[in-house]
Image (tube, rainbow, N blue to C red; front, side, top):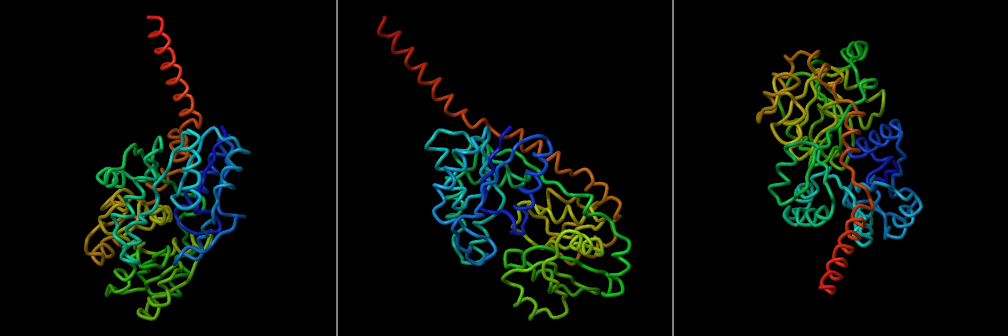
Length: 359
């Protein structure tokens, strides 16, 4: 089956959306499908405000139309709501092509946190964007419930996976880390930005070492304000997995994430999670088993240190990307379904008119 995925977020960007789409595309190809990812790569673009690593395509309508025409997809999935996603949405609506969408990021909440833009404005745009889709795929049941309460419809689940060959326990990493940093080692990995609520973690009066793996617009200010924390910048692949496996607890202070793949990655390394009881962690963490969810993040960290790493590993090993990809493919809709439905309706109307004329 030929599947087109349209996304404003794609490699070499580093975020959960890119990880999800990249792993899904790889697994789908392994299952025998042909995947065309339509991204901003190779098109005129500008840097996204406060996210310079994200390139936003400039007037991509023609490029999107031509690539869809050449590839002739049997299924069309629009993954993001930026310029490319908007161009693909409008093309599908104009040409009566069925498509699916997915909801990955709480942009209305991020915009409110950064620029005080009313979240209601962002959600109004997102409702309009997703409304024509046959289905909108969401990462967790909590996200589905929250979006439904905001007027979103046709929401279906699409979970996430983890590469357990890469993310796994590493005894040598733990031994080496113990010579570099005082234990317990409390690790955060991800974007260093205001919406990730990192200060809630960094200001905790806890013994041991706070490691920050990642980068972003808030790094310089946070590094200056919290000199006792160790900021390592981005780490990738095996090096990222090494640092995760070296930790004693993974701290996830965000209150606005829709999923949080990094939590699955830490569990696959046998490292429990400490987080708030909010969307994302509520659906990913088994409270008291693979992590601790508590409104007091310091309490969550202390209690998570007491959990059994084997339970974390056992849970993560069940979360394969192939399983998630089969779920994704099962939700896709035939691109010409809407055209066929329109033709059928036109034929029915014609038959009815002819019958009336005969009568």
